[in-house]
Amino acid sequence: MSSDEIKKYGKWMYEFELGNGIKTPLYVDSLREVHDVRHSMIFSFLDSVCFDYKYNCVLDIACNEGYFTFEMLKRGCNFGLGVEARAENIEKAIFIKRTLQYQNCDFKQGDIFDVDISSEFGVVLLLGIIYHVENPLGLLRKAASLTSKFLFVETQLCQSGHKIPFGRGTPNQYSQGGSYFVLHHEKDEQNPLASIGGFSLVPNLSAIVEILRELGFQSVIQLHPNRQVQEFQYNNVDRTILVGIK
Image 1 (cartoon, one colour):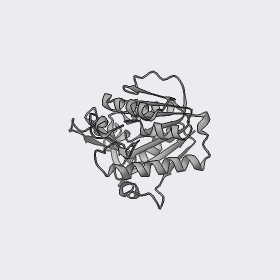
Image 2 (image 1 turned 30 degrees about the horizontal axis):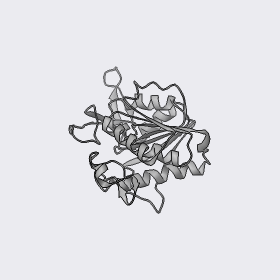
Image 3 (image 1 turned 90 degrees about the horizontal axis):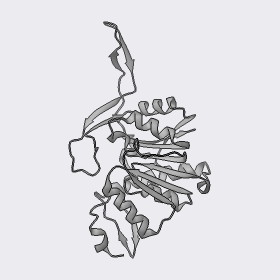
Image 4 (image 1 turned 135 degrees about the vertical axis):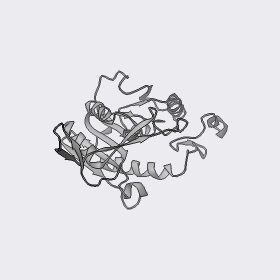
């Protein structure tokens, strides 16, 4: 493996160690801290519940380059499936699979609503995608239907404030809601980290918790950074990881 062999792939979302000191180059260095905190929180939780990787499979929705699929396999996960909309990311994931010689995984390009998946997974990962889609509720519903144990939802959050009044069909009468999404128009079509559809709906914390409870999870746990691995957005709860437990 030489640095010239990975030049054709350009910049990467995740930093993979390919041997001989060669690493995939990140889009921006600040991503490293985000991924370190994600990694720490997810695997600290799974360790705390004595998760049995050997007898479970993982589904990584919007897997990007497959980083967390591979991390689950490193720990002995039985099988990993990554689904990703962007062809260039699937190409990178397959490159990593081949280069690092992973066997028990597969990657499919497409929208999760269109990909044929008939089995349940012990872990479903929904990382960094909810706030980039036009149908976050449908995506959460789909992900919930595919897990038998844990659903990890990592998302940016809008700030919660006062309850928002809204009409319900009777003049001069209003209900109030504290769970909501903010509409964001992502106009940069060249940004590999942006929405594909153009519009995004960014939730507040209450909205995600309420949806997961309604989708049948027995418990919903918010994960937090530990003292050793931290990042400003997670510390400030501008983004978070929630675990739905069946």
